[in-house]
Length: 337
Image (cartoon, rainbow, N blue to C red; front, side, top):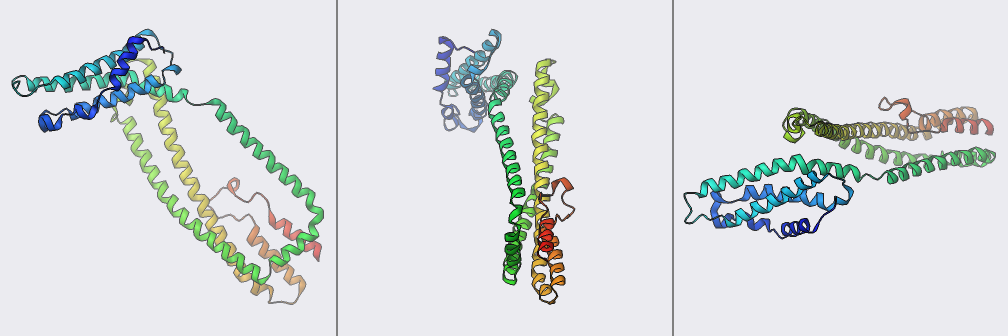
């Protein structure tokens, strides 16, 4: 969209408008102030500036450009009528003039909804940067490769399993167990608090989505209704896409809230279970002098602590423990014996 010199002059005139002075509340009083009309004109001006500032990304036919600057011209004309409105000595014509200005402002606002608002939505879509999205995907793929590399290094380090055995058995001492139990208790408390907050988030997001759905499909927002398109198929498609985007965002918020609640609740139960196991483990390990029985206790304790425990909050695919540490500990104990 190319802006010519006469159009640039119109833009400069609009930028010089002092909307706060247009209200004229102190001068004309509450009944004859232009506070309502000024609020509408200010919103139209904001939409117009948004389109002009992003005009380089738009390709529009001449009649569309003419409609845009027709709105700007009418906006200037209305601001001039507001400045020239006289109450004193014009009491007979003042009410009709005052009403006419407000009606013209509302009519211009409807034209703004039909012309400028769809262009703003189009600008927002054009601002999406495919290269940036592609870069994020590349980073994710790189991270996956790094994780695979770590797994390969873990497989190669099996030759040092004897050193790992000693470190694990030392860590399962009485003091180590109690320290770990305290850490798991802190984590359990943190996730319990987070799960409460996300539970309220779930309720809020569901209510918000319901309200949004009612507003969109209940005809409460005129600009999103089919009647506002006046049978224009392009506008129907634009409105439908915008509704779909809004509902998709609402669904994503609800989905993420539920997911975060389930994850935190799952982690709370898992960490609380581990804390209880570590609190009891030292007593059970000291209860026997038989090495085989002690090894069995260690095995069962490791299963309870490091096993992929199911709490019912997550599906099997959503379990956050990708590596089965129980098998590692069991192999260490068997080899030591």
